[in-house]
Length: 118
Image 1 (cartoon, rainbow, N blue to C red):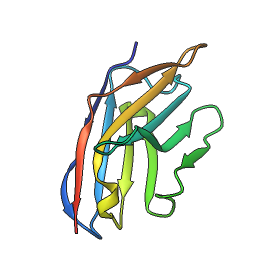
Image 2 (spheres, helix red, strand yellow):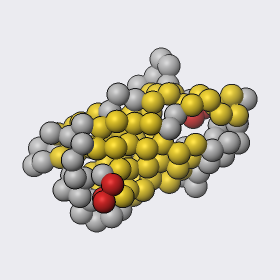
Image 3 (cartoon, rainbow, N blue to C red):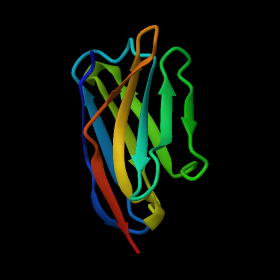
Image 4 (cartoon, rainbow, N blue to C red):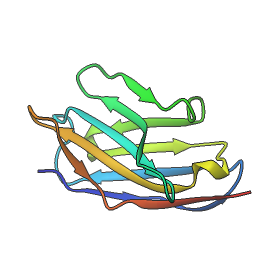
């Protein structure tokens, strides 16, 4: 089992930057993938960025490519999401996700609010 705790959200003006952190309760080197999802009011949760452990490959939603960067520090059991050039449409609750085990069970953090003002 993996417990995830996000931090780093807040209120920022359009064009600004934020870095989200997600601390895991145990080693993350063995999980299948780590990712960040977001949910805007009235919308479904969507994948923003993901890093695959076995290949090191990263995937991004088209809407954030070139602006967001996902990274991980296995020694600190932490995954980050660096966000630059933020837009009002980036507003939402950002959730950290880990997929682990043969069945790729999902683990979620409690979420952190990101609000981008115009």
